[in-house]
Amino acid sequence: MNTITTPIITQIEQAVANIPGWSPIDQLYTLFNLVYLTADLEGDIVEVGSWCGRSSSILGMAAKLIGNTNVLCIDLFPNKNDWHQNEDGSYSFNVSLADRLYGGYQEQTVWKEPFEKDIAPLYEKHSSILDYFNETIAQCQLEDIVRTYRGDSTDFLKSIDHESQDFKCKLIFIDGDHSYEAVCQDIKNTEKYLVKGGWICFDDAFSYYDGVNRAILDLVINNPNYELGQQMTRKFFVARKKVIN
Image (cartoon, rainbow, N blue to C red; front, side, top):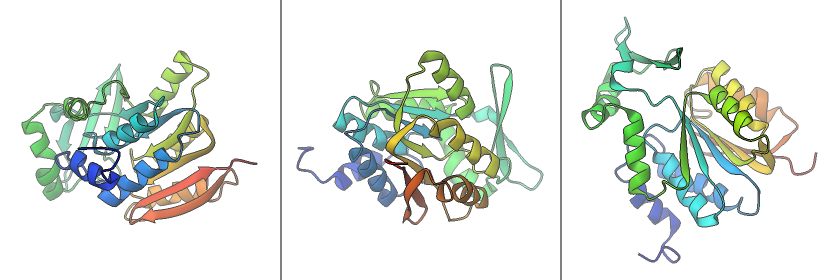
């Protein structure tokens, strides 16, 4: 396949055909285009919430195309034994890392039917979502571009501050814990590295998650440092950090 003349949307469809996840093609296409349009900006790409690598692979494809850009993926990557069933029959998980306990799907849990349909089968192949993610990235030949941070955005913040005080990013994609507090924390932890003209993006925006909606309203739409805020697809919101303040 000639990648230069083959439509990007066709390449995206082929790339994610067998990757589990909930990001629709129109959202992935929009995400790819945003990365493509940041080719002249400094910095890397930060993704909060990566799961099996469906959107990560598309971010990686775009980063590979524009060059000189890495994709840093932050996720708890729960193991099979991290999940537990709640009293109402729904599911949540707890991950223990470095003597710290992290919770997933605590405020808005996963109901039994979607858990058994979309999540439980993943563990028939791998005992950890991280193994599934690494397999995805390897199959897409993106190992040199995509890096993982197992933890949350606060852990990422500490690691970046420790590794390099000059870190910058050109695009942030937030799709982690959907509670208001968590989304606000993810925004605050990552936006300080976003360069002028860079994009901040959100999955599950203005769809079914009040916490996500309120965080975007409070910290992005009502923030004078952002412009061009727009719901781009059914559940994908983007805004650009102002070039001139």
